[in-house]
Length: 286
Image 1 (spheres, rainbow, N blue to C red):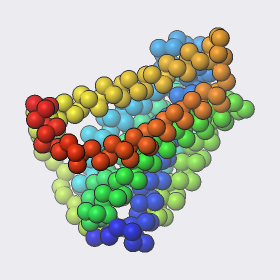
Image 2: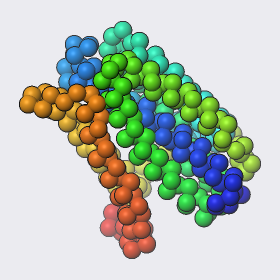
Image 3: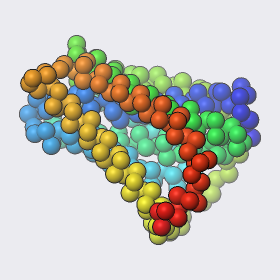
Image 4: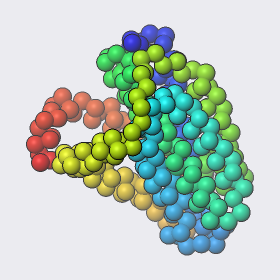
């Protein structure tokens, strides 16, 4: 097992944080570009909002696929290959001739962006001892936030001089480079033991989760929060791109620096489970 603060721990944690950072750059890069994409493709505000929604939906669906699949074929392979495919999708997005192609590519990209989040913490659980796992997970979640911020800021900044196509191209190249670094940094798994994949067993596990009132309450809480979070930020890009504000893509991207509060919140709220134990929260959910 990999112990905390060792060279192997730093190398593995850096790889997983880099992978997480790259995933969320790709997921969120179109958000400050939505007003521009609406004009470029001549569609409604609701229609162009699907650029974000459809990728988020397919990412969520992919978690149900890659998690059980990783138990059979290994977690490293899924993380490495899905990162590269997601990067290639970003490059293709730069040349999408119509909104239908753009949405199809975003659906495919969202699915493969789910590969790393689906199995990264499971990989840590296999390879790290408990203190090392707890330390690494905190950094990994922080990388999620930084990736989300950076995708929007980079997308807005690049689109200011090169348009949405240049933003997608930039993020695609960043993803391919990040994928190569991830491939090199991530240590080879030593504790993983493959298990045969059985679809009925995987479906039964999913149904068992859906029978738990505590888990359903947690799913609903997370889903509602995410729904508000994504749509609030999408709405504000349209509102601020119009009169009287008329902000350019760069300024729209900078608005997402408010997301830095998530890093503070993660650090501050991380100690709450010690104050409000899990069993107490569970009883309240019931």
